[in-house]
Length: 126
Image (cartoon, rainbow, N blue to C red; front, side, top):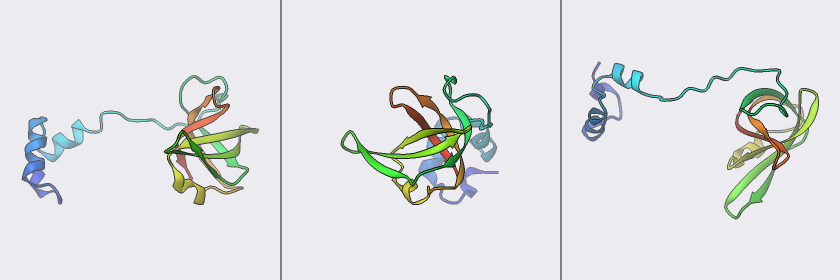
């Protein structure tokens, strides 16, 4: 199938994609995305892991917003991960303050950061 049949793709975009070796929708699907993240829940301790892991968390406190270095907002809340109460931290996601409240179960993808003494997560699945 041709790229021109995709809604929102015009001549300039087609020209740009052609320079990258993409001439059909099949080429587009096989070219991008370049990286996949496998989200698989583990029972590994968050304190021992050196890489990002997916953990199940039970939120214990309401999310609060704290300013971090002038323009960066930090969302902080406490949750039980593997039965241990841990500070959970993420950056530049202000909308989470309305979605995270006590008692909800969620999955967090990230790693324990010894510098900030908390579980710094990149993705949250509610």
